[in-house]
Amino acid sequence: MQTATGYRKWISFFLIGLILCLLPLLLSQYLVSILIFIGIYAIVALGLGLLIGYAGQLSLGHNAFYGIGGYTSAILSFRYGISPWFGILSGMILTGVVAYAIGKPVLRFRGHILVIVTTAIGLIFWGLFGEMDFITGGYDGFSRIPTLSIGRLFAFTKDIHYYYLVLVVLCIAFIIARNIAKSKIGREFRTVDIGGGGSEVAAEMLGVNIGKIKVQVFVLSAVYASIGGSLYVHYLTHIDPTPFNLWMGFLSVIIVVIGGARSLWGPLVGATFYFGLKELISYVISLLMPKTQSVIVAGGEVIIFSFLFVIVLMLLPDGLVGLPRALFGRWMRNQNN
Amino acid sequence: MDTQYLELKNISKDFGGLRAINHLSLNVGKGEVVCIIGPNGAGKTTLLNLITGVLPISSGEIYFKGKRIDRLPSYRICKLGINRSFQDVQLFTHMSVIENVMVGCHNRMRSTFPEVMFSLRRVNKEHQEAFERAVEKLSLFNLDKRIYDMPSNLALKDRKFLGIARALATEPELLLLDEPVGGLSVDEIKEISEKILKMQEEGLTLLFIEHRMELVRSVSERVIVLDFGQKLAEGTFDEVHANEQVINAYLGKEEE
Image (cartoon, rainbow over all chains, first blue to last red; front, side, top):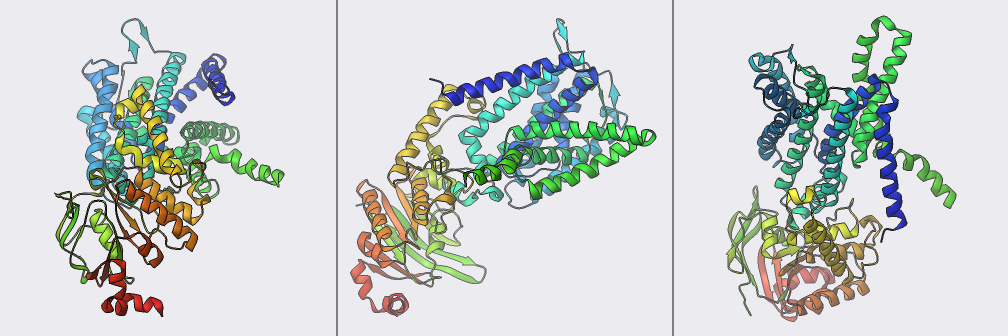
């Protein structure tokens, strides 16, 4: 029998789902495109959230996996006429293999090796995306990438259709992440989060193969990034190295941390916050300095979000999802006292 | 009794130029309760770390039920039936009491990654079984009413009990305890003594390190004394207690 809490949970999910379904019908096409980007970035951040928030492992080079997914799907569908769905699947497999090849030797070591290696990987792949112009189109990239479709029946050419597609993929990604987090695998991820209270020695003594579990979560997070990258290129129908640079790797981590690394809702909140604040800043600058708007927004983004990242780490370690408890928890404790 | 249940053959452990364990051989029989005592720095915890694969040995061999284990990683040693508690407990402080013990139950869970991703029926069934097993282990230590507490909210005695319950959740055949009563009162030591004797009655083999002689006297069938990484003496509690070398190296200093 469902408890009152169970009913409340289902009603909440239903209401949120209803709002998300109705939202694009009420907004302009521009805002719907922003929601699509929020969804795509949230998918990338969700995988990274499992890696950082649950397993306590940090990667600054997830732009590489975002790009491998995007380029694999784009190249297979544009140059070889292969179905974009198969391109997405191929991107996931290739990304998984690359992540495994990196993770297996590196994750045996403790300490900061993973951060350093993934940063280097992020730089290497961004360089490859630009330099291998015989296949990637170089720094100019290429366009006319096929959009996603269901056979000849239906093509996701309109923003509103693509929004619903990304929403479905995000929901599936979230459900899978939630199932993993609640399971024995999620518990094992948390046992190796030394900074968060885990203990690798104790975990291994309880039968946890810590090397294997770290590789599993690393590969999973890379595959999530790959899906995001593929969705991105099939939406824009254009690809070039710019969105897959090292800033994307840093930004993915910033989104996770600002949203809340230890909660699965954190990446969604973080992605929404990022795009929401970016649009707000862009709007304000367009009013104050319309001629230099794009330059200031591009450079300002790095400064502002890096600064916010540091502030959140110092003052709000649970991220924005922890803000209600941080603000009202003290008030409620005072009321009880 | 199978006296070669756990067998250490001439093992040594070096840390650079320091020899922490020096050509040590010892056996533990199935169903025995054996205690290792000795002054600080004698190599007791190092010995447990070598048996459980936390540290590699420098030379020698370790066998458990006739199988060589000294080259195996800890998670494989766990699956063979050896587990331990830690002197500093090493709980997962960000996980609740029940979650700590459920990690120990993972040994028996067979669901694969794809099954977990889609939360198939076997996953939920295994999860429920692991939850019930974990509660059962916690009930042995009267912690079943505190399953959702965080370890930081537990008293020292309960944190130590939690560490032992977690190790028991792996269903070991040989349990190693590293100073299970360090920092506890006389009444709490009595409580742990009773638990250890009950575990032995249920067929568990125990090897533990202790400084508190009340516990050593009340539960151990055999005592091994280590000093400078070597066996100084071995016998019953009374035999060891009367040994002059042991008194000079260890017990005598305690009585001062």
